Length: 210
Image 1 (tube, rainbow, N blue to C red):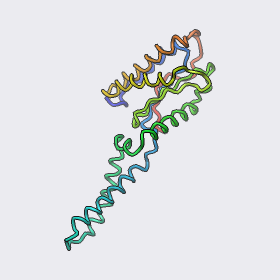
Image 2: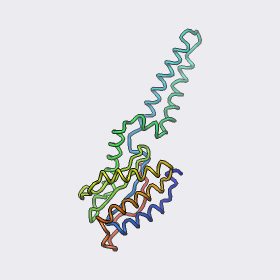
Image 3: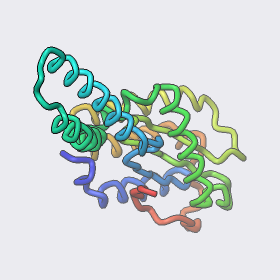
Image 4: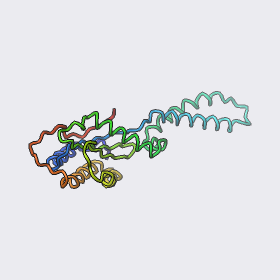
């Protein structure tokens, strides 16, 4: 199942349940990619063009045949193939180091956190659950004004929970499992004591392509 075909209503119901039991504003966000990849298609095209010219010269090195037509076609084919290959997440990941992917995902998650003004909750209990599809990265980002103990351990556990479902194409289950995991982990520490508390953020699954 495509990640775009998830049942958003189920995710939203899970968020409702989470926030009724845990004193947190939970905001899940999905982005197709976080890394800057606009240049990759042109890099691939250039590499393909260099390879093509090399092959043309090698193949026709002992021939009197006219190579002009091949020199004209090579750039066109290289650009087309480069742009097509750039649509593959696997190809994009190949051209960006793991360290750089991690950095850019965290940077974008932080930017979304503040653009959505999650730092302005009344209780300062806000949590961004950010999934970046191309990089296969998941970030849990709490309000920096609060201290959430064992955050790295929490991220590691939830990453395993989500990835187990994502690897089999069960994206909806991955999100539902992540929300349930967070509910169990955070409820003992941050129980919801005010059932009539204001819900400052809509319990929606956000698709972020900006």
